[in-house]
Amino acid sequence: MDSSIPARPIGVFDSGIGGLTVTAELRRLLPHETIFYIGDTARVPYGGKSPATIERYSLEISDMLLTAGAKMIVVACNTASALAVPKLEETLPVPVTGVILPGARAAVATTRNGRVGVIGTRGTIRSGAYERAIHALAPEVRVVSQACPMLVPAIEEGWLEDGITDGIIARYLENLAGSGIDTLVLGCTHYPLVKAALARFLGPGIRLVDSAENCAIAVRELLDVHGIGAPDSGKGRLRVALTDASDGFLPVAEKALGLEVGEIHLAAVQR
Ligand code: DGL
Image (cartoon, rainbow, N blue to C red; front, side, top):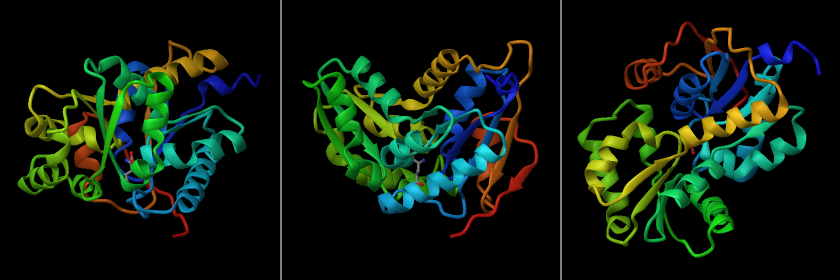
């Protein structure tokens, strides 16, 4: 193995600010790793786009991360995890992990009554990826899904505590709340940013599961398996590039997630 690999960054991407929830967990769990994050803000949201488009975007962003020396790719986006991870695993020369399997594992470990709700973008829900992953682990679990396409734009706008966001949540989750579920998977990496609003609407009887922490654990395992973890002595950094300017990015990263983001670079993509 090339001895320079452990010191290289972990490449992480999402359509926008959502993948920062995964990044915050990675920084907490693996503080000695450097992370290079790309938010594809020029093309956000991914949620309503076709599988072929999401695959193309994911390959393009992954290439940019590889060019910057990434030793691993973390797909910190449920939509891209649902629609593009098989293609990335097949074509990229580095280990790849998504967020669906870690989230499914956490849901199965959390539910007591075997009824799990999943919310996500249209692309994620339509793909059936969570149902498949949950049923592969626990075929008896009943899964109820709901797409919430308006939530990502509200979160990208920085409306984390806002009456409009509360209204969007109430409108989408009304039926799910009364469906007997005891666990709800936040199947979009943007949604942990409105966890408080979701919990307020659903009440204490429904536990919320997000895949960020479980994804970070999966990354640590993968680094170990491949022997490419950064030495514990180093201090990792967070580097951020966006494919277009975004007003909501910095306040959300710094205020809501406590991430130290230095200079944000621009990385152009073809729309
Ligand atoms: N944060 C992403 C996800 O987890 C994408 C949201 C979007 O761009 O629609 O699905």
